[in-house]
Image (cartoon, rainbow, N blue to C red; front, side, top):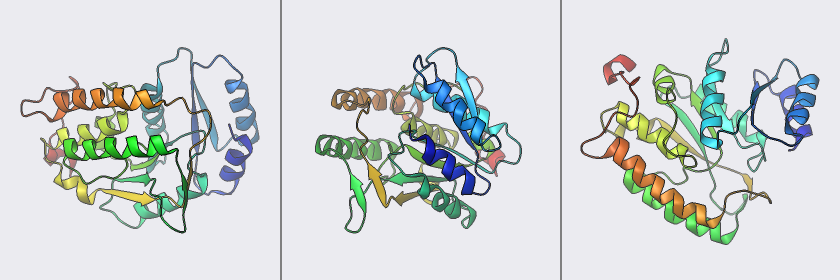
Length: 250
């Protein structure tokens, strides 16, 4: 973990607080997080989960916890390996601040001239196939659902979408979108104006990633399960807590 990058960033980023979720780690992760919190007590918090719950649930619990903080307008998640540099975060915030119609800003790993985006070839091509399938399933022309840098406007709709555990352990990003679509009774068209995919200027495939090529194939199974749960012609409610209707979200 790049401790100095986190502490340097929060010292200079106005209005930013970081909540680290320690997902039941058994190494020195918690001690490292506590050192950072001691340095930047007003800007860094820790949520220590005693048992490992997996990335999807750790992210969901972290976002739900962040929602309960006072004076919060935007929440999101950012991979701690900093494959996406923290310097991109203010640009995400700026997009939401200046466009009231936007509800979400997602990092997009697009390799363009003048940008430094480096991915291993096998992950890139498998990722493109996966993204194409997801785009068809969701009915959205989305380029990159799996980048670990996302920011959301805090709304009752988002709170409802995070109110219950995810079906998928890995492609929860897709499931979040499917839940939004389900809340709008299967209509995905409104998301066209609600999501902004931000082409990252820098992204690096960090060594030591736990994601393996075989996980991409498992992800396809999860996408199918997500489709059956939320998007099939005869959808099932994903939670007994789901009760919002579109007219209540205005």
